[in-house]
Length: 93
Image (spheres, helix red, strand yellow):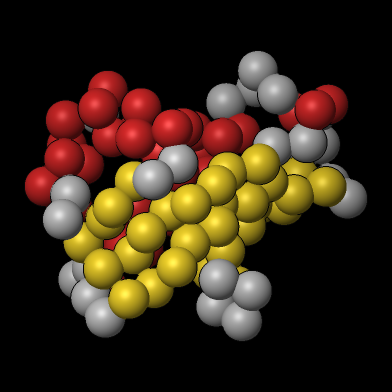
């Protein structure tokens, strides 16, 4: 596996991204005031099962916390991550 970079917010595309070599995973969102609605996550098939999605969501939620936003996890992966990581549950709208 190529070394994964850091999670970045691509505000223009409304998605958080985590680059891994030439590929990247993404967590798409819609920003509505002080609420961020995560709508979809995508990890390239060749990177699945390596914790990339979890690392992406962890980084995205850290940024959400820094920005003082609340989360609506419409995406099943983000919802599961929050359910299994109690330290993030205070971010729920």
